[in-house]
Image 1 (cartoon, rainbow, N blue to C red):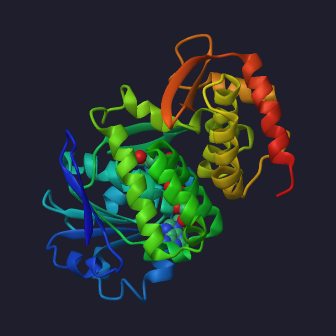
Image 2 (image 1 turned 45 degrees about the horizontal axis):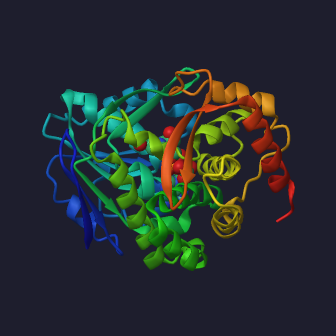
Length: 359
Ligand SMILES: NC(=O)c1ccc[n+]([C@@H]2O[C@H](COP(=O)([O-])OP(=O)(O)OC[C@H]3O[C@@H](n4cnc5c(N)ncnc54)[C@H](O)[C@@H]3O)[C@@H](O)[C@H]2O)c1
């Protein structure tokens, strides 16, 4: 089994990559264990994969973005405490990013920190969120406002889970995979352009490679900046415009898809500033970005004034200008804080034309 060891100021941990689900049997050897499993994952896999696990130690958790809050955390506390859990409990969570955020928060707070194993079952959670130590809850209308830094002790992942993901969720995860490969430079971009067909067919071997590449690139940006004070900001590539588009589209565009559209936007600005050649811009647009944008925004979603208002809300913004993470030259990354309204208007107009073209 391939592994990646991750250094963290909180605790070092390991991501295990597997082509099978055999690791699930080993979890049953843990004496004090409690599982929290996404209800959709439970429904699909309970008879096949979870048939042998002790059902008295399982909480099946219905998840939804609206449930990623402190009330659901309390439901999990109650379920764990109802089986007389002590500090030596190992929490095993199985699901996507929402399950990770809720159970990670539980693990970091109950008894001031439980042992925690995470088994990500979505592409987004496998290729991106499972490393980085963040746990986040929504508070009222504020997304991810409350949270902690608390990595799992172990992550076990297998692409076999991804066969049952709905397209909407698969392509959302794929957006982050494309982003991380672009940030990884020439070899990663080459791998992705050559193998995109196999990845979208969900070939496990190629998915595993794409997930492993993505995590290694993310890791290179987390190094020395686990607590998000500088370099880690660059992982927001595609997110500055992407978050604004999620808001203006009332979240009808899934996160990873908004990120891909956000990368296209950032590349337009970068090309307009002379930081990206027209050739590289076109190659990335034609080969990696446009073919993987499956959910397109409407013209109303891309109304320039609404996007401007949303981009002004960026948490990282300290100056008058707008913040944008951009690519330059040979896969270099930088963050600017001086994007003007006029620059936004010009790039947004070009993006609207690209998005309105029939595929
Ligand atoms: N903590 C972090 O560092 C971090 C990073 C990025 C995103 N996030 C958070 O992650 C969340 C999004 O995560 P996500 O995209 O994984 O979504 P998710 O957890 O909502 O899962 C998406 C859907 O897929 C279903 N599902 C999960 N595994 C499945 C499987 N194997 N087969 C079929 N269906 C399955 C879920 O029930 C859900 O309906 C957001 O709340 C976001 O804020 C957290």
